Length: 287
Length: 230
Image (tube, rainbow over all chains, first blue to last red; front, side, top):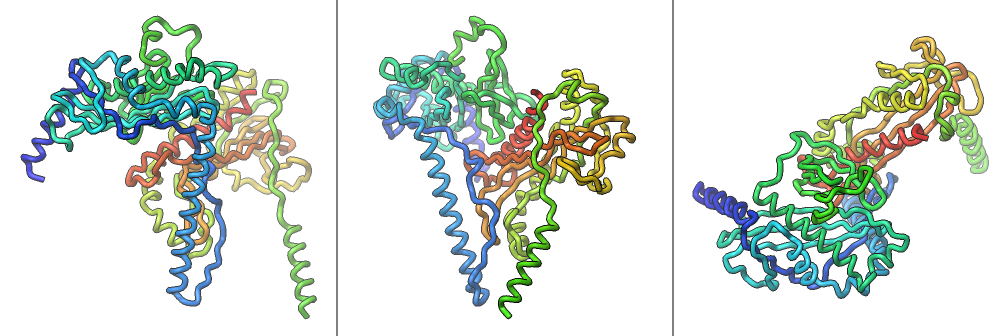
């Protein structure tokens, strides 16, 4: 690449960062897929076969290589099938919510979330495929997961910012994960599905809005660089304690924002200190 | 002739099986307080193993060579990973015991179990190695030991072919031994396998697997500490 090309891209990158500042006009483009994606939280810790022995039918070297190749192909296919089955089993947690989820579209999610965001200037939704008109364009592909204890939603959101009139190569891309605080209810299905699934939709919109705010702050370089060295952070996901190796960017209101080893951002709930959260915390996008 | 050979093979199998020492069964720690652990209690660790990639199932020489080559970049990377605060686990355990009123001291040096002599006494939960000299050496009545045998990544193989993705691994045992009777009052095998989230093959820094490695360390530490919190 020429030096001029590099300079142009650097300039455009600066433009993307500037355009993502708090006063920028933004347009959030709807994804092509209408329905919001939900999955069950799964674990692959127990996936894969154990060690084993194999006797290859090998009349000669070529036969041995062919036998090993066949064995490799079958083993990989088996592993992929197993992973798909694990995810399929995890997705069963969503069975009681199917009627609500099949009606829950990106338009509804993103409109609600945009209304919740506080750090953008003028903001609007764009149809899928529609071009921005001089605004910072945001593209986003959210995937929600529900923990197996049904107490928590986890959002993984791939967000892209395009500066106005800048080439698409200069886009700022980041993945943001936001983990909601676990809900306490005797009947969690009744809790999430009350009022036509309103609590589920509100929580999803809160997570999505938080992810957009975090992505904007990262794009406009407002986030701290965090600790120089990563450390293992413990947080809550449902009733379970989870761990992530990450740089801690900030910690407030029993939540922590971290940058993972894959350079993704995460906003995670910590064990809550005694007493109710203070007023500042209660007014946040997500508790 | 065939019958004789079969009988001979059966006899040899029975004799060899008789020689195999049954593995120590887990012994649950029922209570942890100054009455259940009277006297002075030492807390020690055995030397930590090298952080490495383990490939069980790649049994034959050629299989081992092929599997080693296939996982070379991960092996090179694994050997750069730190132990984090794993060496301080004995300090955490000693502090926990002291909180419960137990007179606990940290044994600063690593205890090399392999260098201990064999114990000839027999009975339930008797250790195969003779730990009794350590009582006099460190001036203690009981010894809590954390012995980590495997640390790093593990990928199962069937001969030449991997049957799993690599995962973060920590394996070891925790035990409490009475240094007068050489008897275990706690024996806990710990085995943690943690998979990378999403794709694992992200060399040269393997961020997903690095995360899994540190998760395995934390989960392993929790496993050793949990019974002592009772």
